[in-house]
Length: 338
View 1 (cartoon, rainbow, N blue to C red):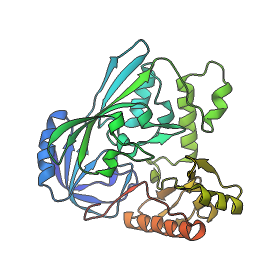
View 2 (view 1 turned 120 degrees about the vertical axis):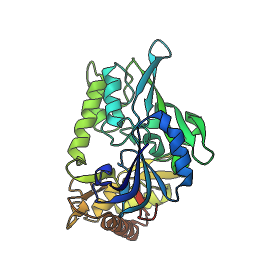
View 3 (view 1 turned 90 degrees about the vertical axis):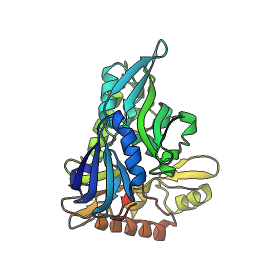
View 4 (view 1 turned 135 degrees about the vertical axis):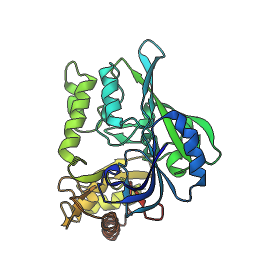
């Protein structure tokens, strides 16, 4: 592994906040994983890093970062119309979606343009437009950094939930090295979320049509991190008691709600923030995106600490108005660790 001391990590987080790390280890091959595991155990404040698309550095990181950059995609036919795709952890997620579509495989098109790497995707159980990663995942290959042993988790053992997994519940314990998905040569669209519902009547619909719709929608609603620093949705959509949701619906008839089961209901966090008149709020170089209230942005030289303070103030205001406590989807990294 190559090591950089006092490394500038501004370009390694999609918020683009200026920060440095005490040490930055670049991990580019599977052969380096054993060295990583040994070093990781000896490090007081280690941090595994993929695309840096779901974290916020409050300041300089007084620890050692292990940047996973391994590349490689393998295809294995398992039946007449099903193919397993094994991707290395450092592969760019969106590029993998594009590559599988170009290979005639459907299944990941709803998850297009989600920033980050393959290795980070299972941690959050990324999802969009009616599909979650778990719906296509077969196995997650890992190294248990606590015991320095290789473990392979089947889909049912990953404890997947809404933006949750075994790996998120045990951050820093498991290094995800590769992920295998089961995709199909036979297109079976998932169109139960707008605007994809509009495609249901289309003739000769293809996976590429869905992909293009998702990409266009995300680009219209969400800022490009290469232009405006952001990490996509900063907060999870809260799941609350259905009785609470019904009470709020009486006060706010236009509030979008999504029943989860007979006892709980999911509420749109962006709508809650928007009702407070915060969409488009700006304070110097930080703010809330003008088109999507869920997205906090760094317009230039905003600090991670200021962005986190803004997030905390939003949580407080939403609770005061709706008695709903928002949970951050973005992981906050202080200069002394998480």
